[in-house]
Length: 154
Image (cartoon, rainbow, N blue to C red; front, top):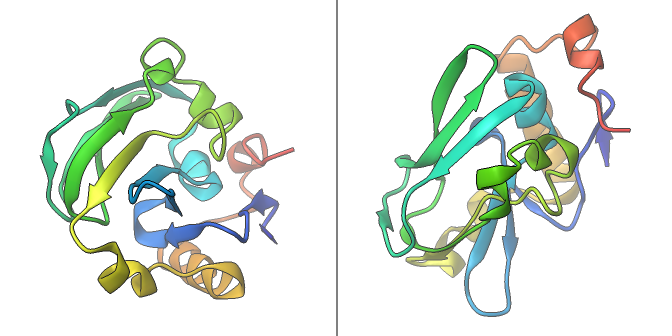
């Protein structure tokens, strides 16, 4: 799926307000990563500092810090649960998030408290595009901005 030149794989779940994608894993964990819109908003990422494995992550609380350009922000989790895995490649190569956000650039895996009860909150497919378009509208996202153009997925 494509929205304003940004790619969003239709098999993933999305948390538009967080700029994240989510993927169910067979072991009951959920993988989270920055989606193409999140990458466009942040620009080039210079560092990712996650919380430690085993940490309890509350919904809407930080699972790590993302540093970009001249700022840093807490990456907030749309889920509560236990942090089970961290993409350690990002510690040395945080630019993987920008280059392959849906693949090698994944960020963390959580064992959510009750994924089946909350998964309906995260749209997929066409519903995700609608939700992402609305988030872009709320953020006053300008797809014609020349800085954004340089970040579009190829």
